Image (cartoon, rainbow, N blue to C red; front, side):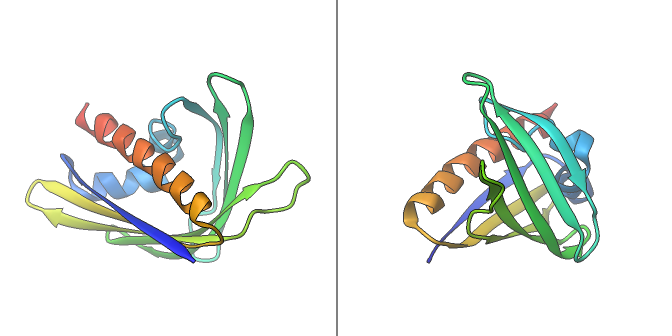
Length: 144
């Protein structure tokens, strides 16, 4: 099993950074990696609530859907949820667990993004690259 952790210090208050992770209008600005566009975002923001997002690759038009369930919502400090991709046949990829923590650092917020329980190291690396790009986009979005 593989895991990764990404950390960013963002120029924004913690409550705003947390909301960027749970409000669809804000998530559309950064959630998908660079080169992808979010098409839909449906959230049942409560412990045990499901979430579902669809993204499209800007270059090929390929559409991907990701799904999960919220395991923990402790606003504005911590968010944990499962993550799987929906395959073309409707089955799901192996489930991973994402945990994001938000720590005040003066007028900035440190975000620690951890994803674990990958079935393969290749899947782990792919997600690490994708989330790194997404978090870079979050940094840019919050700097506006």
